[in-house]
Image 1: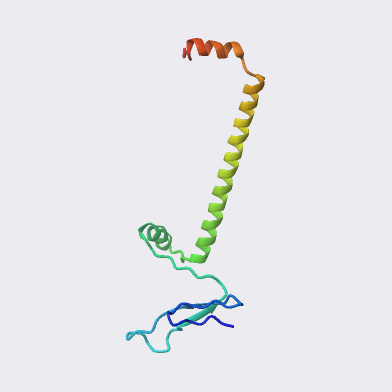
Image 2: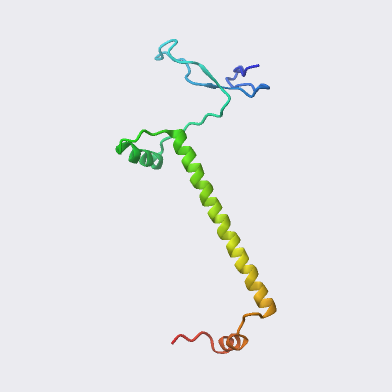
Length: 128
């Protein structure tokens, strides 16, 4: 069963999860039969608006003669973001481990110079 446009123009979902997305609406300026009204696909489709920051990034590639392939850029961007998230997660885990070790050292007193701690408490930090 296919998705067919309803009276409002929205597509109805079917059991095969086939997407039918509008490609172009007919208008008085369109060449009849030159475009498809609906494009069947099983994959989600996305559009990207070239806002000033997006245009600036893409123009840098275009000025070097690079062909802009949106799919490739999205894949690279997603992979880079995953690397960033993983690095952030590892950094947070490292900090949590350091905090845990500090709390343990404070709790047990292991590795802490108690006399130095009291001196700092009484006299503050002295820089020479």
